[in-house]
Length: 132
Image 1 (cartoon, rainbow, N blue to C red):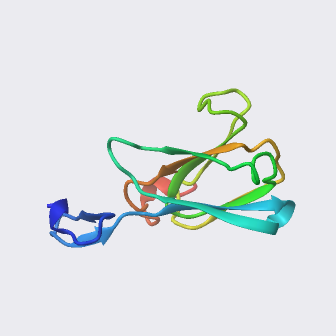
Image 2: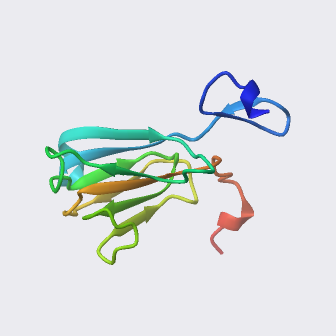
């Protein structure tokens, strides 16, 4: 059972071994090309009852983010001008095919960020991800 795991962000696999859940975090940058001041948001972890978390950037970061690096534990990140997850002006970056970091560069209007952590790490050797 997951309750047998000591770490609060662990899950029990089929063999009964405790494994760390993917950690979803984002590093924000004030300039393009991942330069300037930076700030880490997260980490957040998958929970069936809370599959995403909307982060309200504080006044020193609202509207100032120009690039971000997204950890491999995030399935999806949504850059938002307002607290409206499905607004037309939002920009979505997904990372369903790998456990590596992804980057988003050259944008403005970031006041909120929605983090969607992965429930499990991706099997990058899966035949579903082969490009044919």
